[in-house]
Image 1 (cartoon, rainbow, N blue to C red):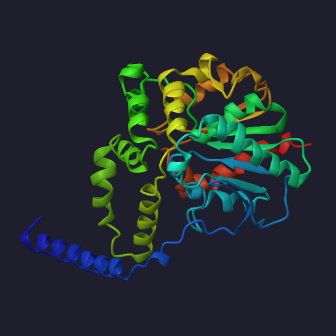
Image 2 (tube, rainbow, N blue to C red):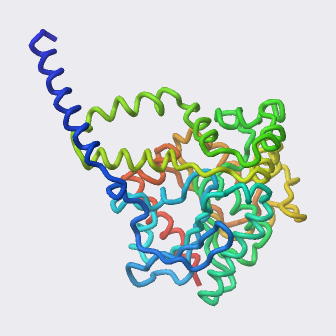
Length: 358
């Protein structure tokens, strides 16, 4: 490139930067709206809130879905913005949707266990939905860690779950393809991380610590490249707001209740007890073979947090004769925010559910 071309490129970049800086200076908190789909609080227990989203069309299916998200991030990623909302797209197809919001654990929640989350909060929310609709069983949709919780719940309370859908859900935690599994202890077990020392010292595990751990899985892409790529669209206010909205979700990381974190890391990541058949929640053993209901397993082909092999292992351990798998060519977060996936994922779920309704 000659000097004139270089100068022109530098001038164009400078103009983009100036416009971007101007847009940044005008941004206010209220401009970064999240969770825009109308909803109502229908149940509250401690920090946990159960929401019911306002139906947008006449229900095409008469059994609602309860979404169970992970503890690690905030669940509004499934309803990020008007044109990128997994929830809104399900509603448009006539699905009745409920969502558990775990809230922000405080020091008072340090002793909460997986028993409290699964036999307590999830079970109580399921009962609320069942009572509101006068149903014996409902549909459960578990996402990421929430999918692991949903598998546990479906094993312990199979009579309360009509159909089970799991998305980007870790099942075999000793798959060595994912760096998160290695860090968690799939090869070194307790030598990978001294979870007891961490919880005993810190109590609740800071959300910022976990967020840093996730960022370090792809340090260049998540710490450098995405900010460089922002320069291509920094002069477009709509794109800038989309970027900031996503950043807000990424860094909105709740602390983790200490005892629940201890059990999840030691029993799931280090012990792989979910598939070993030795996991106990409360005083009850979780046996995946108790799951005989229809199951839809959805995974992301390029997932760096939950390797596809970890999700696909599920088929070997459940007893369901009605098991289906669907995949999408995106990463972990792309399952929620990719425009193309959002065109296809909700219809995929609805098409799978329809033949399984009475």
